[in-house]
Length: 319
Image 1 (cartoon, rainbow, N blue to C red):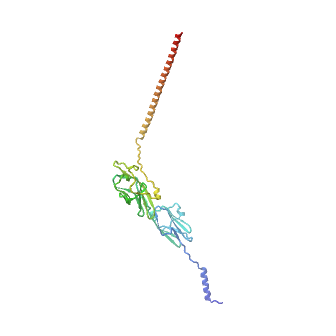
Image 2 (cartoon, rainbow, N blue to C red):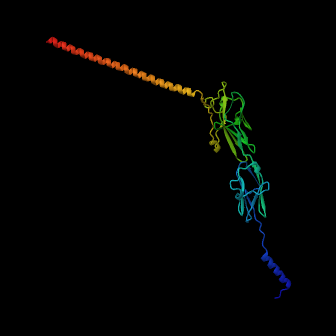
Image 3 (spheres, rainbow, N blue to C red):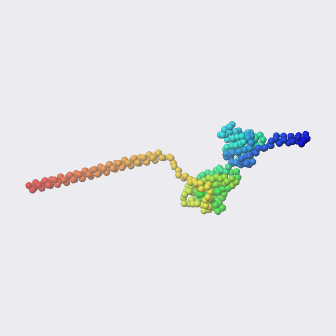
């Protein structure tokens, strides 16, 4: 069989393409978390992992475009660094600060992937002094100020029970506390302010002791009969955070250091004086008993001599 020159050329070209052609495979880069945007709290420790299918030694670049230093360069004690391997790189942002927010890029020679880091203030109670107090019959707001990235929801507790705000006309829920009008002695006691971020489920709580001042400027005792529970409370919720709370009570016992030394000296003198007086009295009793004893002995001796003399006289008369 004879082949034309053109046919041989075509076969040669096809063979060369089949042997020499190498398919181009693009590496797949994966970020963990596998999102383009993540929101985290300030102060949190953050870890982002970048992986590739080929040994391209990926590197991390910060929001300002500079390469994140590796752990080999700055050590594991650094706050921000990258732990690099041939097929992956882990980005560590420890104790995240406001300046750490922005777009981070994981890059190789052939591809890159980005992730935007958004930092926010975590929910926390900033100010809830304890104890707080006011006068009888006044209007007062029990302060509980909260910092939260979103509008939080509040739950107030009195002596461990949930306060039913709707069923208590004198109580009004405010953004920064619990407003009480026409304060009564029964309002005194331990309260708990609980704030909840409904979007993330984060929560925080603080125990607050509330004292009511009587007309004589004496705080209403928490355990007095008049400091009864509020009329409108709901049963305690079966939440872990509720069961772990312990409402605080005020320490109303005060001690004064003035005059302590004089009092101690007076007490010592009184004890010593009492002891000496007791010893003198005891000696007087002993002496008195001794005198009585000696008198009794003398009387017995006198009686004995009298009986002897009588007997002698009787014998002389008989003779």
